[in-house]
Amino acid sequence: MHKVVIPIGPQHPALKEPESFSVTLSGERILAFSARLGYNHRGIEKACEERTYLQDVYLTERICGICSHTHSTAFVQAVEEIAGLVIPERASYIRTIIGELERIHSHLLWLGVAGHEVGFDTLLMYTWRDREIVMDILAQVTGNRVNYGCNTIGGVRRDIDPSQTKDILKAIDTLEERTKYYIDIATKETTLIERLSGVGKLSKIDAVTLGAVGPTGRASAVDRDVRRDDPYAAYDKLKFKVVTDDHCDVYGRALVRVGELMESYKMLRQALKEMPEGPLTVKAPRKIPAGEATSRYEAPRGECFHYVKSNGTDKPERVKVRAPTLANVQTVAKMLEDGQLADLPIVIAAIDPCFSCTDRITLIKRSGSRGPAKRMSWEDLHTYSIDWYRKKGLDFTGLNEKLKKWI
Amino acid sequence: MIRPGKMIKQVLGSLFKKPATTEYPFHKKTLDVPARFRGKLKFYPEKCIGCNQCVRDCPSNAIKIRKVADKVFEADIDLGKCIYCAQCVDSCPKRALEATCEFELASIDREKLKVTFRDNTKIAPTK
Image (cartoon, rainbow over all chains, first blue to last red):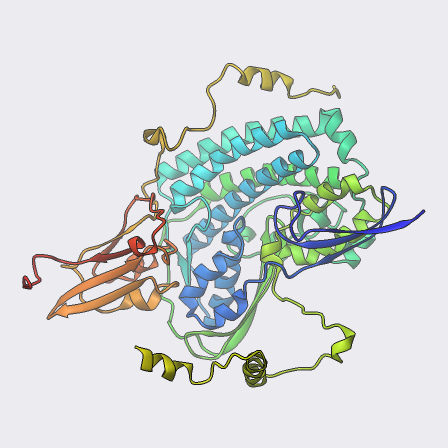
């Protein structure tokens, strides 16, 4: 049959964020799928180098609009490791509690989005209504629904007082009841099972080869979780089960996520009960000694990785972020192989993509007519741009002096 | 039992319930802003000692402290630049800054977002 290549995105109704995909079709069947990242590049890594460590905590928090605590914690952990700071135990418990509350809100959000992508909007309405319960709790504890501003270098900024503990426990009870209802729906509603089963198959071997992380990997029976394998914050003191599933399809991914919700409630109850009294912060130096550190964090979407290199000043020399979606986006091509075009939105949504967190680099392809690509230093690039504009008839040299004359 | 329409009971039940959403601009009283909310900043000029800690820590350069007379300071806060993290409130050694619960700050004029806090009692009246 005749092959057709269709572009999807960067702007497309099926996508929530701008990203470009190219799909090769034979009729309705997908032959090949490729993604091109780079439409959300914001230069955050470079911006981190221009700001102090304390300012970077708020900047990294704004990498993601859903897992904001993830990025700020991962960054702060790396900085604390370089500075040799040991945070108070209460602070590590509070970080864990906020992290788990964030996971609950993210997974409920995903459940709604998944429902919406398969045309089950009733599920979207109800999960998002219930998500408001956890959002209200987060607002009450940290002061904001997203971008909690809870972390600081050497601890946390906000305490959880007994009345809030009571409110959190009450909210967990309601949410647990609701999640049991959603598990009941996920396992018994035929339309959902039929629509999601066998869609976006990813075998265990493929998941390991392509480096799938988080619920995407765990739904393909890859038993990996940073919280258990490389515990951070207070996870080494909490008892929990890593939820895995062997369905290897979108249905399995939904089951893993609702299963993780149940584990999160258990963890929160234990953490709130065992949280010790004590200070919230240790004093952090403004200048961090030279060194480098990596930090891993199990975000709702999978393993989030931060690398920080310091040079003894109050600003980092290099910050590197690898968001979980970057690890998972390659798997989509495998999942869609031989699939139907109609399954594309749900298969992309099933990795719970967060493209704006992922974009760390923009590649500019040079066509063959302009000759081979060459490397340029910052100074070369500067002179190149001046020359480029001069050829167009625009001369910006000495602009400041000219402006001064006018003023 | 595996069957379609598993949510029908809940959906029909919702028909007779109040909406879960609030009619925000019309009913503002139903909005419950948490006590720890970080809204528009408030500056107390009489407490400021001009140490510039807030200026140094602000992630978005939204705050400027100006010395107008001996031990009298003014603060210019750009609400359009402010990211409402309230780090300045934490950084201030004299508690001269406070995050209020005010959040309806949208404006179509950028100049209106620039707020100056000054202590009128300490400034000598100018002609």
